[in-house]
Image (tube, rainbow, N blue to C red; front, side):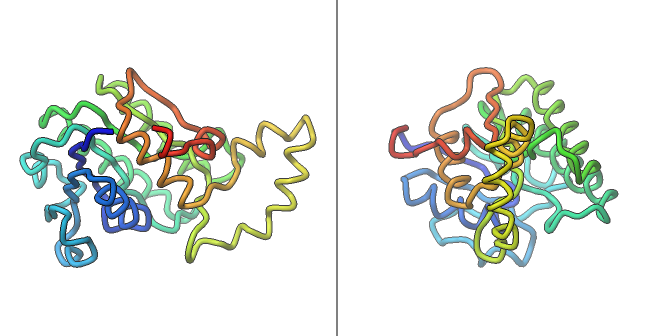
Length: 220
């Protein structure tokens, strides 16, 4: 594994704040985009860029020599009440990231989408599906992640659903949906993100819940 240069948007969020030190620990050079006032949340070895994730002009010239851009910006604690934000934040930030990636000559774009189709959170899923289409249309080699819910510190309430998942995966008519909308842990997602950074996609690579669970960075 050769060290890579990575640019991360949403680096101070729930996933980004864990991905940055994990990549640094593996020898990668990381540049993180954060809002003003959030700089101190990141490790000292990380190069920090202050900017607005919704405005590509605020960071497109600060990407540097990064080969990969990991886009993690999104509405926190998603719920059906945040329909407007899914478009005004999730989609606008993605368009900005893709424009900046094109400007900077990024070779690999990693996008955190969501499992689909799904019977709930229709506006959120629709926004992420539109985002996936934008990523594909960009022409940049990409990896698209489709987790449903990520379990971790402060995000454990769905654990009581595990018996239901267990049963649903054993019934043929519900098996596919239960697997598609399964739960992944933050460690599983981080492992898959690391492997994607270390193995540039050819074309557009899609990782669903099952694929995310199976990734092992020590085998990359």
